[in-house]
Image (cartoon, rainbow, N blue to C red; front, top):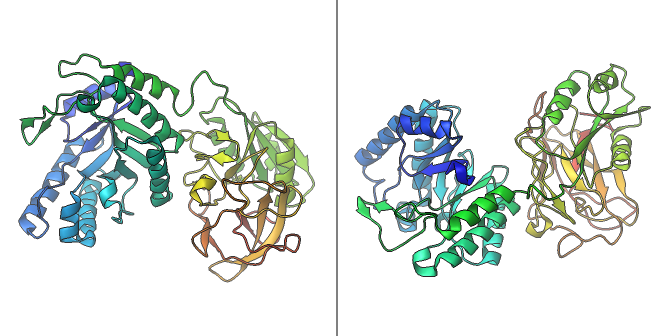
Length: 477
């Protein structure tokens, strides 16, 4: 598996410790299945529920703390008929109990449940990530459904835990072609990863051989099938083909008296796993030596008199050499494992400069602003409504924080006549939106909730949801 570009394996039962040791030596991570599901009604029987919880806890204890463990799936695809019989709330409660059992034994581990489209309505917000098994043979429908799942996932990572096609009925060529586009579209949609079902045609269910399907990348005798080479090549080229030119990204840090945190911020930026980016620090008249600290790092330092955050951001954007401009606050720390991802035209598939950063494609009719975000330099779509002229950050509406104090906001506006997806604005399904949440900050987490207000006089259009918010009058948080 490792030799064919696989870096993670999903098991449907908890593996023995020696198997985890082998996986670690082969640089493989294991997503451990706990088998908490049953294919008959069982939640009314307290004895069965206790036995399942004990089983899950014991299996988690056996794997706890091993570095090869990627995470745990407490159950897999509880049948929709069983969910309807017991009711969604009862199943949700049961899955939360299983999640708690795992956390008791392995508190730092990721825990989830392998859901599927028939029960997507389950509210499983207590899980660490969203996992779905998705078998769709239409490219358009698959892409559209992943977009829906991203909306359901919110700020959590979306992991596709099963994709594939049966070569027994469809043939080896059809299987290979299907897996090729399934893998590529999964990563293009911003998913955290995909598990191909399965490694081999040999499969057991209920202690019996399954002989009437062939989902494997290898045959029952472990001979490679056509799909194996296709899958290996696809995994080599996602999320980006290694031979393609990666778009240059300009990471802009605006600071005013941020000496306490900017060093950790710049060290984090220096560890980003992206091959083509520059770092620009705009020192907006700091008096505490923040600019001198920035000068110690491999950055382009721009010093100005104190003019405020909007002016600093505009200067950073105007000075950028990259195709994409990514802003990050001087008190935020990017996760090096989360890449700054490619923008194509006005569409940004996924951006994770900070822990919970999420700006989604305009085709999904959703914008989730946070304290740090990228913009496509030539074709921005981040403004929900386009003003009549000009490009840049400008003070706009006053928003009421939970405390009742006003918050000054800025809207990044594109050129007149810009388009985002199929329309000039993104219609949001809610009247309020979280602007700044827990986002990997070095200091305290901050929250603000936006309420639509009339747009500035320059436009005359209806209200828009701002893309960033700052406290006070053009000041830094």
